[in-house]
Each structure stands twice: as structure tokens, then as C-alpha cells.
Length: 93
Image (cartoon, rainbow, N blue to C red):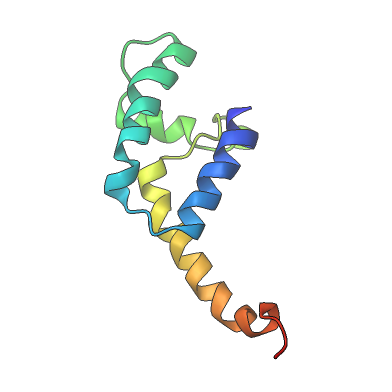
């Protein structure tokens, strides 16, 4: 549910809106300090463990990315791809 449902919505928001790392910090804190410890049954995680959990399942992780690291790359991808497509999406005059 998380990696398929919510992650796709968060990715859309990061691409469609100007979201900074600071705005995503509360979300990352909730993942880091509440969700992931509940899943792993550990009280706290270190940076290495958080990085491992962010890996895709194929590589042994849970596929829950570090949200603050992804915001700028998603926005950059969107602003790079959109301008060449925009004229084709506008209604014909």
C-alpha cells in the first residue's frame, strides 16, 4: 500500500508543486521515527539502516525513499520534460 499508493501520490505532488526539502521534513521525520521503527520493531534507526530500507525490494530494501532527497530531482525532471510538451498539450487556437 505505502510504496504503490501513497508513494505515487507523494511523487506526483513533488513533481507538480514547488516542494522544498524543508516542507517534506515532517513527512520524513514521521517515516524515520514512527513508521520504520514500527515496521522493524527497533526503537531507532541509523543513517545506514535508513538508506538500506530506502532501497527497492529487489535489492533487499522496503522501497521507502528518503523523501527530502527526492524532492529536487522530481521537480527538476518535471520542469525539464514539460516545456517541450506544452505546445502539444494546449488547445489549438
